[in-house]
Each structure stands twice: as structure tokens, then as C-alpha cells.
Image (cartoon, rainbow, N blue to C red; front, side, top):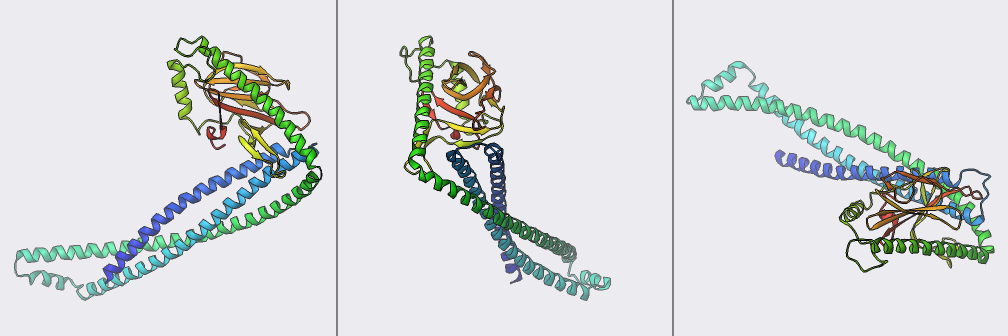
Length: 409
């Protein structure tokens, strides 16, 4: 009966250990995510809310606040997940403590019975008589082995009691720490919610003024989109022209002048394959930054009738920040834009990365560049005070979502 109880206790402990290990790993993942969001909010504050006296349009203020509100809501969500997971871990630990106490009680009862039995036959004379009363030498030998095993078992039982007692103490200490950690998360979430409520109130006041002149602001956004579309067409034309030029001079057999795909040499194929294998692991094109505009179609959060499209991502960064190559490649174009800024085009086999809105450029056409090599200084807008890099990725003439390629974008 006692053996069954011990086996059941051991089985429960194994199950608890597996569960706790899984939860502990998940807790580490959530904490890493929480720290990442905290860093994102810090960068949003630093890059989008640099000075209180900064002159911003109502539209820009609303968009910047929306960026911070979404990050803050994400922080609250992840912190809640951590607190809920801690609650489960605390409950699991309480159950484990209860199981350990039951097991410890069983071990102590068994140990007490052994001590009592040993006490009754503790005299050297009784042990000698036990051996001498054997029918033959083989029986005497077996009795001697039994006495040694019994003594060893008693010692092991004492060690198990000591180990379980220490494990119980460790669990109790961990439980106290988990409860403190949970309370800290709850307190932090309360403060974050207060801050979020204030942010939303400020945003509502701005949105009210937006809606008064919704038509005017919608027109502004659509005009900006037309400018962005014109830039996109220009980028597409440059890339198609580069493909056609590369193919017309290529020794590889292709349709002359094609603008769809690059004809690749063995070296270019290897570079393209290497680029492709690093999908999701490419470094950011800036050392520090936050994405303020994502790839693809997006409905304006406050003007639901307005939809915009972004061919790449826009990253806000620090003044005088440098743009960096995201992978080894060759510069094949330095474009002077209509806005007076510059764009750098880097080819990576059949892939292209584009760095738009540079002030000064440190490379020239034909240069080989390495991963993370600085290629130029990003332009800072004198009116808004913002430093924003537009970053695009193409596979041949097809646009790709940079967030699929860059690490944790």
C-alpha cells in the first residue's frame, strides 16, 4: 500500500516538473517580449515625441499617439499573460508542495518503522545470534547480505528525507518570489492603464478636431498617397531597367532585354540563395528605430473611408542616423529623388534592397558592400524634425514585405 502511495507521489511530481518546465520557458519568452515592447515604447517616445514644442499637424499628432497607444495596449496584453501564467505556476507549486509533504510524511513513517525495528535488534549479540542460527553457510551469507542491504536502505531513506525537505524549502522560497513578481506585474499594469487612459483622452480630443475637417485631412492623405505612388513607379522603373540592362550584357542565355528576372551567374545564384536562407534573420537597416508605417494596404484608424498603401516600411530613427546594408551585395544605382534626397539600390543576386530618403551617401555605383556597412546618412525633415528611412525589398521586379525578412520587424 505504501509503495503504491510513493509511486503515485513520484508520478505526480514528474508531471508537475514537466508542466513547470514548459511554463518556465513560456514565462521567459513573455518576459523577453515584454522587454522588447518596453524598448519599442522608449524608442517611440524618443523618436516621435522628442520635444514638447515640436510643431506637428493634427494628423501627425494623431498618428504618433496611435503608434504609442497600440504599443502600450500590447504591453498590457503581454503583462496580463505573464500574470496569468504566474497564477498557474503558483497553483502548480502549491499542489507540488502538498504532494511533497505527503511523500515526506510517508518516508518519515517508513523510516520510523525501520528505526523501531532496528532498535529491537540493535545489540551486537542479537545480530551475531541471527547469523549463527543459520542452517548452513549459504543462509548465513544471505542473512549477512540482507543486514548490509537493510543498513544501506535505511541510510538512503534518510538521504531521501533530507533531499525532499530541501526541495520543499526551495519550493516555498520560490513561491514567495513568484507572488512578489506577480504583484509587481499587477502594479505595473495599473500604472500603464492609467497612462493609457490619459493617452486615449488626448487622442479623442485630436480626433474630434480631425472629424470636423475630415474632408480636408482625407484629401491631404490621398495627396500624400499620390506622391508615394509616383515614387513607387519610379523605383519600379529603375529596377526593371537594371534587370533589362544586366540581362542584355549577360552571357547567360535569356530573352534579350527581359525586365522580369535577373539572369544569374553561378556567383549571383549562390548570393541569392544565401540571402533567401536568411529570411527573417536580416539585420535592421538602421541601428535604432521603430516602424511607423508598415507594408501593404492600411485603413486609417481614425478616417475609416481612407485607405493607403505602402510599398515598403518606414522607420523613424535618430537625427544623423546612418542607413546600413542588410546583406552583402553590390550597389547598382544611386538615385537623386524629386524631393532632393537620395536613394541607394543594392543587388543581392536576384534580390534588391532599397534605402530611400538619404541626405548624404557614402557609396557609389559598382561598390561591393558588406552586411551592416554604413551606406549613408538619413535625411531629417526640417519642418517635422523627423528622421525617417523608407526601406524596400524586391525579388527581381516583385515587391516583398520587409517585415518577413528583417529580424523581429
